[in-house]
Image (cartoon, rainbow, N blue to C red; front, side, top):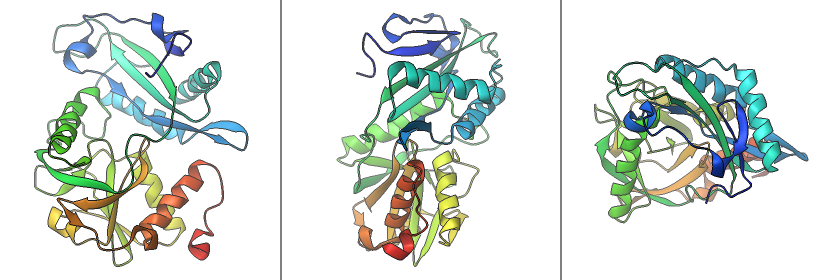
Length: 297
């Protein structure tokens, strides 16, 4: 369960109990997936609750609403303030926040006339993905970037993710890896992907992926630790030649990939730069020093 009788959420201008909240069954969002959202983490940092990169997430939420032509008038500062209030009212510190913008009743295929904001939260332990994942290259591709706003986090896009993820599980794998329409590696159903080869990190270039905030943080960490990182197009076969690989995302953080299509990556994870990045990311979200990690590992 994500909530109980005492859980408080923000919905349509008020703080209400989650169990009492309701929405219109004629909502355009329910019928057509016309909604935008974010996934955000908070952490206990030096005795306080801190939301990691709250402004970046809410800037993206506002961008998603704008490109989907949804009327949405909250500022980033207002959204951050409301999020901290949701955490405070629930006494959450280590938590996951899910802001969601939904639209009013409309059975037409036209832009929303009115939107409603909800911010939900629940306590979090990383159970979304686990280390040593076995990936399967999915038969499903990421949507055509000319057909959708790929850089927006839109609810309807995630039907593609559900199909790919379930296909992998039905075939005995932990998770899927999706390609773009040109056959290049794109991303996971809910995470960006990196691989390590000969001391260099590689990640798919923008254009056919959701350029994640965690992905950007990993690139920042690589730059701060002087680890070479390249954004480029690459194939599944190239990735299978990697030393190590990992998924990254707000919920996943940094998670080791053990194999792809039953091809095991050759380098022991603990001896890899990827493992150092995993530790550095955890230190960063918890507000602790990580630049000495390369020297102390």
